[in-house]
Amino acid sequence: MSATLSLVEQLISRASVTPDDAGCQDLIAARLKPLGFELETITSGPEHFRVHNLWAKRKAQGSAPLTATTLVWAGHTDVVPTGPATLWASDPFVPTHRDGKLFGRGASDMKTSLAAFVVATEEFLAQHPDTGLNIAFLLTSDEEGPAVDGTVVVCKQLQARREQLDYCIVGEPTSVTQTGDMIKNGRRGSLSGKLTVQGIQGHVAYPQLARNPIHQFAPAMAELAATTWDAGNAFFPPTTFQISNMHAGTGVGNVIPGSLAVDFNFRFCTESTPDGLKSRVVELLDRHSLQYELQWVLGGLPFLTPPGTLVDAVRSAIYEETQLHTELSTTGGTSDGRFIAQICPQVIELGPPNATIHKLDEHVRVADIEPLKNIYRRILEKLDPKHSAHTAQKAAA
Image 1 (cartoon, rainbow, N blue to C red):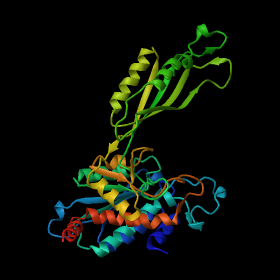
Image 2 (cartoon, one colour):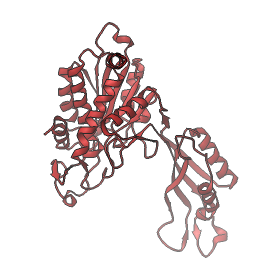
Image 3 (tube, rainbow, N blue to C red):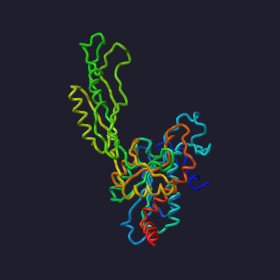
Image 4 (cartoon, rainbow, N blue to C red):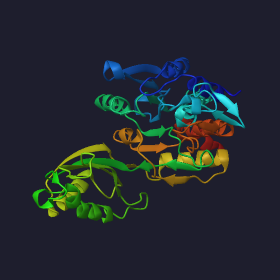
């Protein structure tokens, strides 16, 4: 069994259902401390929902560590609930092998990536103990939950300290059919609205004495659904609007409801802003003469890392290990990359295939594990100024 596979199994066996870390971060910290990492545990949240975060950093060796660039491995140790364990083919927290696959909650999202981060770093430092690169880990147990006491809290503390981050790789499962075939170099933002349209309750036989909020909202809903919010750009698809919930009425068939509740969400690209979307919605609702209340929740801003030092290094590492020309993508939901991108100029996401995440019998192909670790190690080598300079000298010779 490889060192990476062994660590993946140890992590899966810890039932770290959000926000419980279940000792995963302690396990990882124990591997990092002998490598020279300084470890810091940052807890946040109320007692009944205590979140554990780990910030670990190994400073570059040499004469000028303060000017060294910093690469951060970022990820989460928490997993989503399993659902009925009886519906799994095997215990979700007992790592199990079948048909060349490793089964267990978190196998893909994202304990394989965490193990690969650690072992890649161990192998790299064994070969390059004098690296000129700062290496850090930012781990949280609050990514699958509300995400208010996790990575965002650590980022605020790092920003207050004026901690410089240059590159970040988030271990989210981004691949489609084979490790390395897709990476995320950005994500859309998320803006949610909770709309309450006010009407007047009454008997359905006397509509002239009532005001039906469903009828009033219907033309506005049609216009909202048909609106083109932007055209997207070379990296992002157009911004989308979706209604996720609607509720009105008392549960009987002869009462006109007095109010209508509507939940909706924008997944928006860098061509739109939260304030711009808000103002357009308000203008539309006002134009339809609705009486309403509207509350907004900004889940995260979009971020984008165009081709450059980090993307080029990742692409090259993937090709050298797998001979795949990776696809850049900004699709999918939000991730903790949205918080890290506020303090780090280059953020990408790279992990194993994501076809089974959050599903019953979540798994990862064993054949995808070691290549992921090797890709991570190659990225370290390409970003390390000492190693890359030595490689360039050998190539020139």
